[in-house]
Length: 281
Image (cartoon, rainbow, N blue to C red; front, side, top):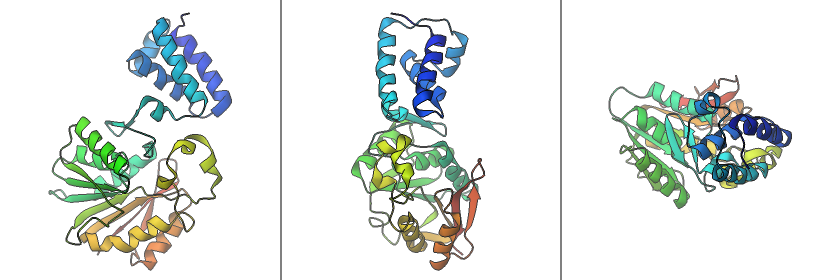
């Protein structure tokens, strides 16, 4: 049995849309590109090309997994983030485009001179490695509680030829000496309330709950980071975290209680609260 690229794109997108809606076409294109070993432009340049029997069998196998709800990133084993291709696994969150705002904000406040950045709860190392890729003169330290995540982030640093990012196992700041000081501390911590119905929907059903859910209505980790970070920041250093679209006000209030009276929230490109940041004065 053979099938053309255009037919597979149309039929598979329709089938997947009926189940999941949203970005079904993006998912189908990603699977097809992976099977063909070609960029997305190839799909539109050669729409009448037929897949070989082996390619079609592989696509059907991968597509069946997507129909069961498994995230494309876990099916393929990688996700593109910033300018990097990152290995992913079910032990870590899947890097998402909106998290690139955290990278942009960090790069915007970094001194022009060599300095140090700390990434808390680094997961795949996405944020740490994106910063490291843009600033070879900056030393980036990523920490994660899970040893599997530390190993994965280290592998991603190696695969992307980045020698200025290093990863260690740590429960937030616990493995760091209080002599360590950083110019910027970033984090995409767990911030979802355990009762949030979105946890039973979409890709997050397959992602580790420990990287998604926090106590205190999703604010426990963010509050802890705000309380502890001053010990590890240089004077004038910046702290910034990603959070939920409806948490900006709550995060600012929690940080004000922790001694950050001037915390401010940045919106993402969809106009939703996404990053709260504050400077140690």
